Length: 263
Length: 350
Image (cartoon, rainbow over all chains, first blue to last red; front, side, top):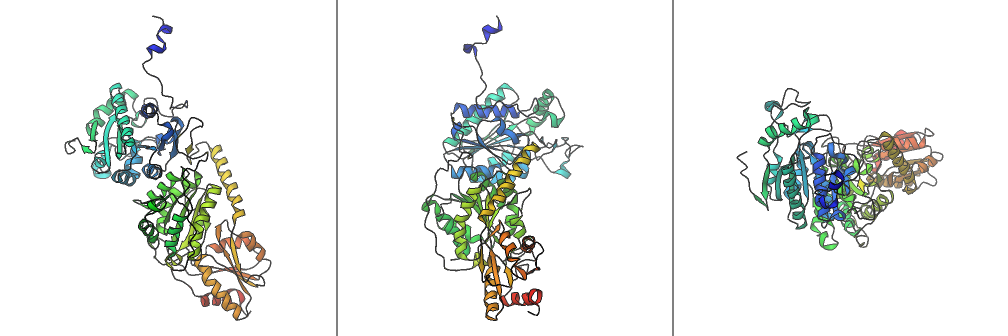
């Protein structure tokens, strides 16, 4: 069969969402951010809520998320995205508001804003991309860096006695009464991509129903920061990140569905 | 009512959409009054106690991007915490109001009134080349009046405005004529607001980031032009200046004490006048420059160790002697203290 015979509308299985701009992504090849961006925009397009959606970009690799997402956005100071989202949502309760943050942003400098937005049950969606490292600034240790994991500020590996423990902030926010849906997903394989997209849809639907805060962690790679090839980093993520940050729903419809003491 | 309560009531009446705050002495009455008044029922105004001053100013930042009328209030240590957010708001060119009921510092300092934050308020405060519109009330009446005025200027220039008060005016009780209730503007439909991208326009982005130095340079120059243009909204007041031979320059509560000092001086036959800057930025440099050709000397009277005096000196440009008199750290001077300082520093033998 000739290729021209295959490229026909009836054979179309996937189309790039129109809510991603034509700007070239600034992310490293192999990074999960691009996939995560696409999934969020696909859901917004499918729900036809572009005209009512306001996104908050963080400080970090995704600081320029507003260059790629074709929606109204505000760029927050490091860690403050949940506060911006709170301000907007309180004054525009009928709008869909989400934040998109990394681990340094959300779980270190923005811990207070994260915990309190979750605890107040702000009716927003928080996307938390956890790659265990500060990517933008050049691979420094993050609050979620694993024990023994090397970074430019833990060059001999994270020493728990000196540098403290990696923070499972997702398990913490799941225990707050204000969170409605808390899940941990990944985007490195087609199956994970499908599950993540379902979770994103569920989160925006929950916001529509005014159910409270949805918190979606996406465990991702940072091949540049981890100094690996994209494939190596995905394998490393499965072998090291997933055991400590296990995938799956943690809280559904306001009820914890996972044994938090087990992992 | 108290100055802090006047600000709060005026905010409801000005049709403010949202207030985000955090308790700190001596301004906590603003948040207390607002929560007691049920503004959500009176006008639909949203009032939220944030987890920190940092969060409060960032809630303001977020909401200001949607074109809503939003504000916060705090006192000196809390205002320091807000500087990050204020810098972003100035960089992103958004209108909002910040009320600073100043107390003595540095550090935790004292809860007593002070004007120690003049530099911080008028020279930017946070990082980067930016300015706030700064209004300095000297009465409870002005605490109320300046809320609406601040929003008018903030929206005119798309710039954060600050009411720079102090613990004296915040806590003082005076009669106030309250402004009439304004309607809240439900949908402020300007081309720059982020309220959801519609099919008929490009997406709107609120940001202070320009990775390209050329663009950042252009942005900074545009801001500087805006700050220059603000001069047309300079406000000040003069007392007994027509035949004055010596001039006091004072703002806020210092100006109240200076007015009394001028009355006493006049009763003793001394030709003393007072110039009260109402906007500290833009600073009334032009009128001070004019007085430098009329009077023999100027005393800048401030509840600090000497801050505004630098701007007075710049305006005078060396033509006549300019001195500072003031008390830092929350200690308040009397009219007689000021008169003694004039005798000592300016009028010696006059």
